[in-house]
Length: 216
Image (cartoon, helix red, strand yellow):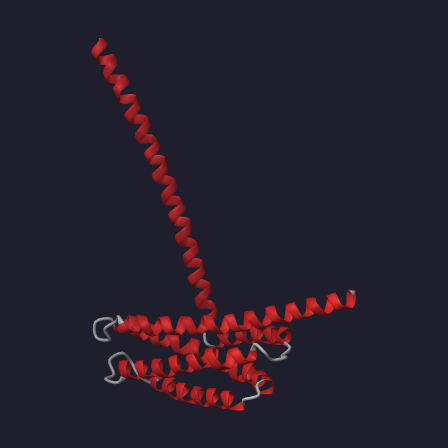
């Protein structure tokens, strides 16, 4: 009975690791789609700096995601999936995405084809996401992959790739900024509360003073 329970626990752990890997990749997908939606709201002429920063950030994040899948996730998927075509097609789509990213790296927001290139990149990425999530991820859910070991490898490699692309320090700064904003908001709230309390005390004292003046 103990051995059976141990096997069940191991199976649940493996399933949890699988779900966490897929959730991580889907988070990357959602972040990319959000970036493309944000770009649609910007004007490359009026918001040149914002466009440039958004494109650079998105391209770096897509590179990390693609490298992570190609180095670790796709090899595991190729062994597990009965349909090898899914992995082959995904890798070809990555090649196209990387060509567009390289083109964007040599452009600025002032280039005529800058916005068009990023929009085309978005179409390719969204198509890739749809196929990956509705076909590959679903099929992998029924495979016998050592998800726990793969998860550890992917998390470690992801950190290295983020450092290489200069994303880790940026996220840390963003986190620190958020913390600072939170502290500032808390401090501001505390000061406002203090001022409000002082004002209430003053307002309470004023009628008393007026009553004393009338009595005199």
